[in-house]
Image (cartoon, rainbow, N blue to C red; front, side, top):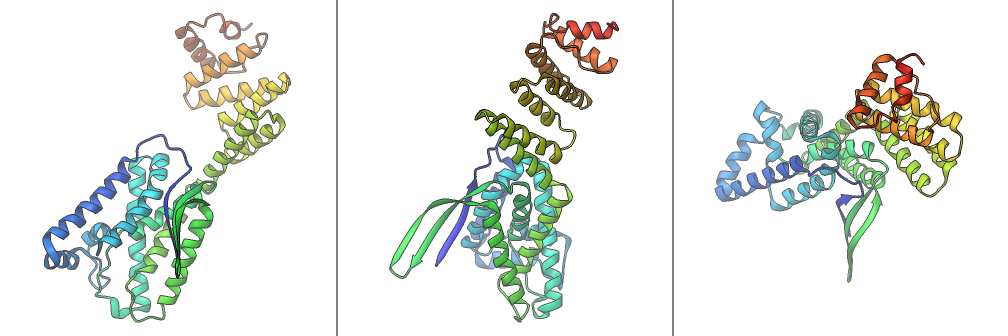
Amino acid sequence: MLLVFPVGSDHERDRAPVATLALVGANAAVYALLAILGEPGAKAVYERLGYAPASPGPLALLAHLFLHGSLLHLAGNMVFLWAFGPDLEDDLGPKRFLGLYLLCGLAAILGHDLFVRLFQPAMLGERTIGASGAISGLLGFHVIRFFRFRLRVYYLLFLVVYVRQGLGWVPSVLFVGLWFAAQLAASLTSTRAIASEVAYWAHAAGFLAGLGIALGTRQLRRGSAELWLSRGRERFRSGKWWQALEAYQHLEKADPGSALAAAEQARCWEVLRKPDQAQPLFAEAIRRLLARQDVAGACDLYLEVATAFPDARAPALDEAGLRALVAECERRGKQAKAAPLYEALMGG
């Protein structure tokens, strides 16, 4: 027997996973409270707030996500939540992450409701609890947005008298793909059963909801852009200028209109000593930054260009753009570097 649990990824995060911690804490707190109430009290709560297709209530649509029937049930769900949640929260922000979580949880329980009505009518009155449907949605979103990353997993192998455990790395796509295949197989098998203890169709529905939301919001394109940016920078650091340029051109295709894509291509042309190719791309990157109201970023790039090409003319900008750059240069005390901008404003 082989048991494998995800414990994290190699995606570098910039913010603390506050919302993910809050979800873990809320689930743990609810479980602890029910343990204090004892079995009769907990059973009454499950009957009141668990979701049953025969008597669906608006409160149960949300409350069932925070109820767990055993410590193992809770621990398994929280392990997966902690493995995938922080990456998504870092990328989406706490509010949108929580929105994704709840939306996937809703899709999961409605998918389970439909399955029970179609294939297991004997279970219409049975209560369903647990966060696994919402967490399955996070897996579906994660595998699209972060397809290029690896997951760190803990494995435990039992072979009669042989036991081995440890930590390892597996591609995210491989792990999530195998996980979903197992859930889908169990879901299809359960269609022939009168009843089932695990709501596999909730897992499948939640996963497909997360997958659909990710594809609908172009997360695959964002992941591709991140991939080409990473490859370009790695090749640039290694002195592989032409290969880096090719990667940044792919970045431009994955993220059209990206100021970063234009700027990085320009830097490649600069080190290749091709100023005629570099300068127009620098100017285009500055225009794109100004269009996004990022005057500070545009000024940073302009000063870089002014240093690399002292004799270059001012980038071709409209009057508003030129004035914005001049004002930012003056604020930084870089009047000398701004001389071409002054000339452009004066019509020189």
